Length: 256
Image (cartoon, rainbow, N blue to C red; front, side):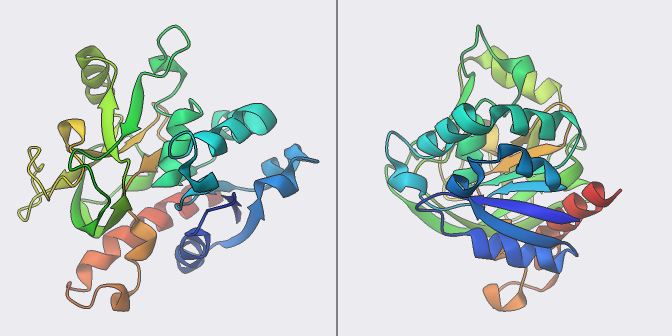
């Protein structure tokens, strides 16, 4: 199984994601969006799609917005077919912002008159947050988090505050099991909005969500930067297993 890692000008975590995918047992190809425009159906030759982190297009018009417009205008049919055929899709940090702004998360079932019902806004602290956080797996719906209770990994973003258009939307996401990951405290319980455990002020401590089918996952933290022991010399090795398990779950699902 080969994973497709998409990149745009400003993407800077593509190699990190590639290393994690390779450790999880898959091969990969990193392709700039521009190289796919002439033959968009080539996207469907892959078993997994990853939109990695970075600052695509310099965050012009908002983090992930121009990358999302690329997907919407040049590849939306291919991406929708990718999702509808059940293949795993992962968006990390800027990639999460892309999936949300392209309407791929939380999915069509949550759209309100064609308008997005969730977004990732500027951090409540008003500044870029770069620190390690604890994450608890809040949903069994996501194929990516199966068997995972929690793990630690870094965050590095300025626009990561998960917000919904209404309380009803938030309740619907919870009821449908689409809350995949939450920021947690030292006891691995939901952070309850406490800073810096919840680094950005996300509603309900939401760090990542999935679609109703469970094959699409977006998260703000960077699990790809918590798969080698040397990436966190101060944390026990067992904590690195959870981050790698996320990639192994995606690879195993794509292979079977």
